[in-house]
Length: 163
Image 1 (tube, helix red, strand yellow):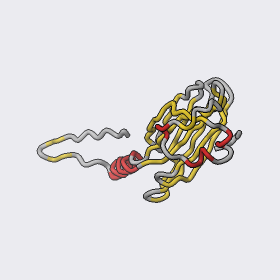
Image 2 (cartoon, one colour):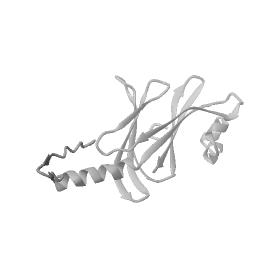
Image 3 (spheres, helix red, strand yellow):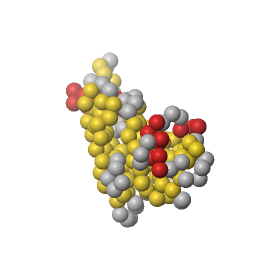
Image 4 (spheres, one colour):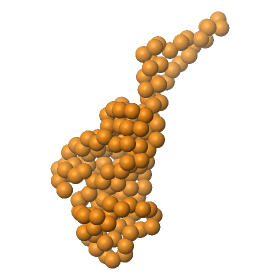
């Protein structure tokens, strides 16, 4: 599975009862950022093993785990649940249990409920596991990135766009 998967601060000066209006471009940028901020990536970090413990109830219903290639593991434990705001201006990162770093970035808002985003997994000072993955995802739709070795199994990242 090699390739699986302004704050803009406006200062309003008041002189003789008149308030300075933001420049139209600044107002547009601020509005765009408010729209961007409406999207987040919920990330579930799962540890898949064959330890015969089953699927952690905190994961919830996830039929994909019972189908190949994920069915080759009989146990899934939820290690962490994080929410990363999706932003065009700067990527957001999450340190993974194996020391690698997940990076997400909003690339484009395609519609009210559809975005294009990128995700990559890097080893600080080392080789990339997932150099760059671009995905079109609907709000609520999950995609899975798996295959990084961890302890006696692998890490499975479930990334779902939320609003």
